[in-house]
Length: 290
Image 1 (spheres, rainbow, N blue to C red):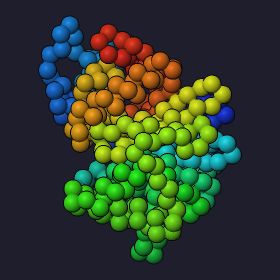
Image 2 (cartoon, helix red, strand yellow):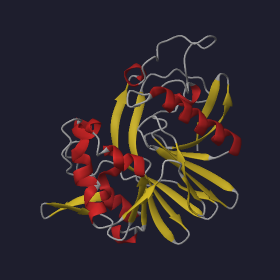
Image 3 (tube, rainbow, N blue to C red):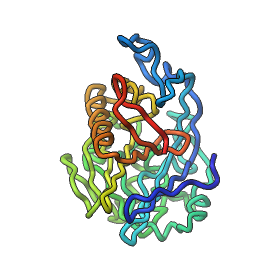
Image 4 (cartoon, rainbow, N blue to C red):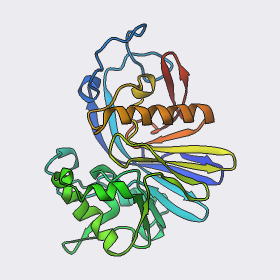
């Protein structure tokens, strides 16, 4: 895990990744149903222009720190420490030095002004809160948490019953202090230079987030992708996608926009730098780390 991350400049914004944890290496067929199905004219998918065969897929949990317009923003907040997650051992009772890594960037929890959520899954909301004297309290006491309304509303449905603990320990304590702001299903501009883009499929209200400044553009993808190979094979959904066809449409929309605009893609789960660009490739798109 890198000790010193690269800072990307998008106009007036400075963006740095923190790797909270590495979930492991997985065979692509384990994560992507249909991986072994033949594609006309394509023997095997690749992660970049080198066309090297994909043997395994590494999944990180990436948290992005953004300094922009005099504010400090986080895009998603990972898994968090000490969270009871019996449904997934990779998320259960972690103890990671995320706050120390944040401090190494010169950011204290009190400095964070906003937390922007692409969606509200357990590995994207965890550091919203931390355990203090046996209670879950907001980690970033001055921050407003901005989230898709449809994601919050999902936790009120029977389908969310098995994950209700995520809402109770990582979302409800923030909302109880009236630190929540909600984005409607159409998305749109939140602040000058920051836009929520509806990209449903992985989850009902999933949104990617576009940052524009001084003629440059970046897109925080959230879970539109889980691995670079989905650029070369955008038809592939991961096992984590709730609505497959919608996820494919969203993925293609982000890939097309990024290729046309030359946007930097900032991902939630890619290894290496976690960031890259795409160009139009043979039968799909080609990914290159930046």
